View 1 (cartoon, helix red, strand yellow):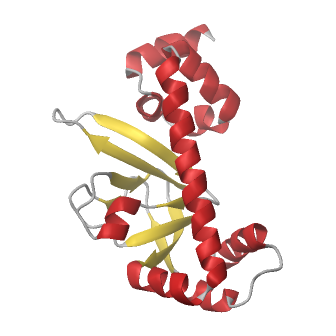
View 2 (tube, rainbow, N blue to C red):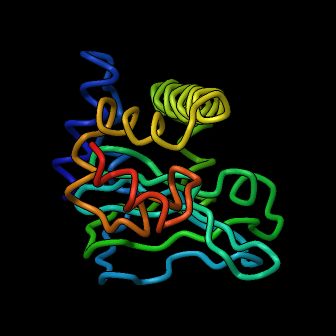
Length: 189
């Protein structure tokens, strides 16, 4: 698992990898089972996770306990509830493993040490934040202007593997569409 994280960091930094061994030692391996809850709304997020294998869902519940998926995060990406992780305040989101997953977790103390002592880690973190922000803004702006059918088409074009990998219920939640509407529209394509 550590080798996958090492490749990920090297890909982002190129030859600028001094102290990479120090960074890698701060991460602890974590194996999850399918549907294992990693973070529950109201808890303080204590880790940032690198996904070596598997998939995580970031979601919330409304007042009627309906689930809304903010993101589905797959291999070679990072996942956390960054506001809670950074501030120490209770999380407003939940995170669960959709599939059995292999994660590498770094806690807040280790994360802060890396930020202070390894300049390259700060660069990787900025890249992660920028990519996460850009992805969220793009998705929100795109979905606001698209019909339900166009959202499905967008997903098929931009993240085609999701259609076969995940349940219709999960995809509908990610697209902000009722599950029955999603199934009916998908059948038309």
